[in-house]
Image (cartoon, rainbow, N blue to C red; front, top):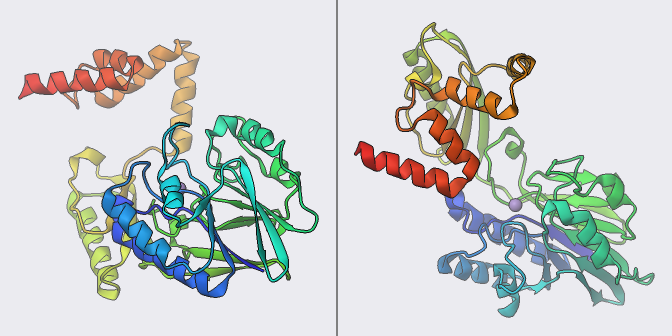
Length: 369
Ligand SMILES: [Mn+2]
């Protein structure tokens, strides 16, 4: 049997909304033609309460699948227990079958697979939740056993304490493990763990320049194959400067943007701008132009990580309480530069919480107007 493994479609993702639909549709149609069953490993939608337009588009896309689809919810879709998440909505509309802490058997031409799915849970409960939900699970010897999850994995993408690890996953009684959540395509545990990656670019990081698509797993040969669904071209470029002036930086960026856009008008582009500025010039002094589909990762004059660590070490030597160190940091970054708030007051509000901070800033702004 051939299993299609898809993940992280992020339908409705604001920045590249059309791409999110087009690329999911391509993957679903292609998988329908080449495989027997589709697994969607979470984050079908980008937010837990999508726009009606997004839901409609999702239904139109999933309608085009001619084979069964089993799905779990991702962290972007997770809602509290008694509330409906958008993947459940697709289930109600008969587009997918949702699995959450349960397994389902699927049979074709006398061959059987058993899929156990667990939707996203907060990372700190991942091990406990998986262990608990697997208590009632029994591996079927006459079936091919698949586990589908949507979590961080310690060795691949640290998400906090007590999260899942490769070491733990390897001990589980499954022939194949499928994980969403990680947007980069990966094959781990000698091919036993497949991470399809997202079908849409979401972060414009260097890792996103690799192809987007899905996996086909063949239960006879026990081999996987990655299918590239083709995305808008994405380029990642680095521009280095030394003691540069504002116009030098601006000109170099424009030249790079023109060069790429001439080659590929619809391309997405990240330009990392690194190095140093002329003496007396700071990162915030220069205003960089905005270009469509271009993300500028501005690192000019930003101290290296090693230098920042040294500075923090020095601060610790002064033996100040953590709170004082943090306040000192905030002061050095904002005082004399931002007039909207008083640094000390701002710090207190930040400690109290987001709502208090926003209220404080709003009040300050009103006074300024
Ligand atoms: Mn995701």
